[in-house]
Amino acid sequence: MNVYFREKTVANQKGLTLIELMIVVTIALSISGAVLAQFKVGEQSRNVRIAADDIQSALRLMQNNALSGIPYQIGPPPTPAQYFGWRIDLLLPTQHTTFVESPTNVLQVLENLVLPPQVTIQNLAVNCFGLCIADENALEVRFFPPFGAMEFHYRSANGAWQTITNGRATFQVRYGATAKIRTITIDGISGRISVQ
Image (cartoon, rainbow, N blue to C red; front, side):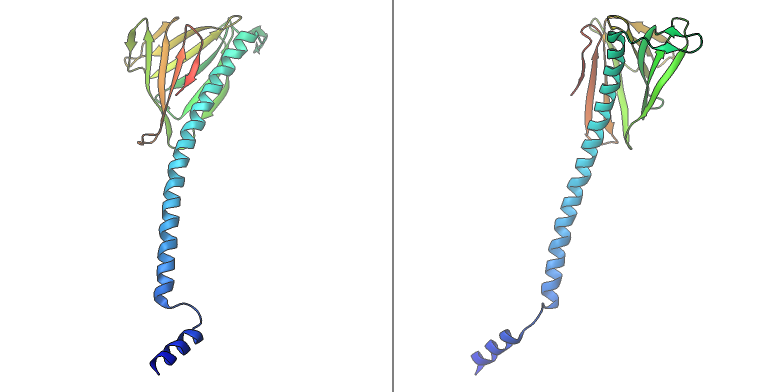
């Protein structure tokens, strides 16, 4: 009689018990929590990659403008460009600027570019002939037509501007306090702009 009672109970059971439902919900929440955590890490990496690529594109655009000899006209009266430039200032580490300057020292900002949220530029260093000059807080990279010759103008911690014609500049693009970092290197001798 006991066997008959069990078979009848199982055959008439419809739906889930409360314990079974709680187990399913717990498993679903655990899986969704893991997926959301990975999504957040992926979003941080993506924001750093996008920022580094935007900076590299802006630098290459200014370099290409100088190499192609674009007859950029600045202000009245129209004068050709003396150089094309790109600038970062660690006092405003979430943006960078492209600009053009005329031979009469008229500067025209072409574009102010803002980095994605929580992404900043850090650790700016200029290197000239093996001498590393650290603690700079601003950098201008100037590209001169028609051959794209490059100059680095940097402002050190004491506020003085310096110029280097054959050197290398490096800085990092970083997401908050995480280990999501891309390093950008600008080589003034070869003209190479790389992201690692």
